[in-house]
View 1: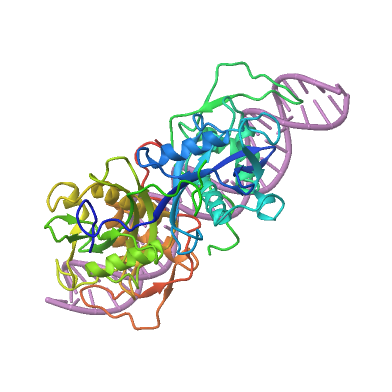
View 2 (view 1 turned 90 degrees about the horizontal axis):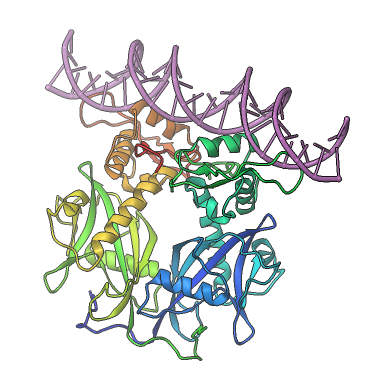
Length: 239
Length: 239
DNA sequence: TCAATAGTGTCTTTTAGACATTATATG
DNA sequence: CATATAATGTCTAAAAGACACTATTGA
């Protein structure tokens, strides 16, 4: 076995390490993913060659920032690495993919202030939108599934929501990410408020913009995990 | 942004990609991890430089096999990649770590038929055992946490168990991996048997070796996810 | 006033948890 | 027989889910 280091046969020549990031947000009730246009006109996830001086997470944040989205108010975690032979024609490349949850930065519908664009995940999957490079479609699929699972047993849904948010905002996040109704709204609200540390009420008056009774505003609590989880409706059987 | 490929500035020189694998098993009611002795006398996780001709998972299986454990009857999944600057002195190296669940291959207490040894995870953590190279202690920590979480919402506990197994065997797996009692044995058995596709009874007569009523034997069912999950006792608060 | 949204109350069903009881083996 | 282990039954408490009701705004 060759453990490398400064001795041994040394590292394989020509192995590249890239970092990609799947930046997800909820806009207009639909899950969106950040895609960016490359210099050659193609589209891809934000990403590129890793610089060994930075950590992998820092690299993901850098590429997201270059595309126009700062991850300061969001959440970044590593997703998976991809090294199938032939996944990048012309070189041996391992892609370390990340996934990030951010609140909608706004700024109109397409633009985000950089070369990146938020695109509805469903449209991309159905072919309405740019075709992504390499295996980036598959990476997006994995990221979405990760997000769906994370919303079940963590409080990370708050990372998609605006800073003071309403229970209805949270409900919309779950609905957009899961692609299905997270059950009865009343029961949902009760579950959220019963889970200690999930949300904390703000002092600010329950302002309102539209119709109906004004809603209370909350901010994210200190809890990171949900005990018990908020499970999405079972996919028919246990499968 | 540099997406690399055959054009552009090309990959950074001197970037190494290694693959590591945390092979876990349950032996004598305790969670064990496979460690292997290197040529220089140090100990580490099975792993080494990645060969671009193979997939990352294949590489993990190869390194496990070289250490003495074939993963055919187990489960392998990717854990995470590690690229902190300075994690490998002398070179920039990204480690793609994997975690595997295997039934106890037996063959006595230490040996497994190769340079590898199964070591109790708790002993390693408390300093009773070899010191592992680089950041491998942290990788083991992450792998154990992954295993604990996976047992909650997947059927992968069966991958730790012998081929026909008893409900008591499964209970022991949960107890060893979680490091705590998974609740009442009777309720545990009911939960396992109610979850469709988790376990299927075997035709074979319920043979017995020791005292007491002989137990029924089961094999792994087709289900991969548990709906609802089998949750471990909450860590005090929701935190 | 009505319509729309937010929030609360309550009832039923399901599940989890504690614990007793029965079944079947060995010594 | 006593004892050990497996398996089942039962009761209670907690949670989930369905759904009615009240509260508060804008039109």
